[in-house]
Length: 84
Image (tube, rainbow, N blue to C red; front, side, top):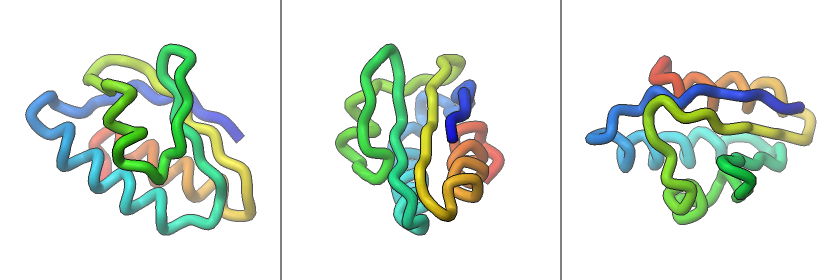
């Protein structure tokens, strides 16, 4: 499963949201990737997430494989769109 998400994280909240994103991702057993500008990282890795330089207004692709993939994408989309 894949989903394109437009990031809505204010610049001054990136570190807090990154930590929340990783916590949420680790609640799921699915294998989850986050991709920006052709670079993919494990969505359960804080350093990986931060290495992508995710900023407000940019799009990322979330992909997940596993029994709870749909729920994982819903939860992580909410975090990136500041709904969680």
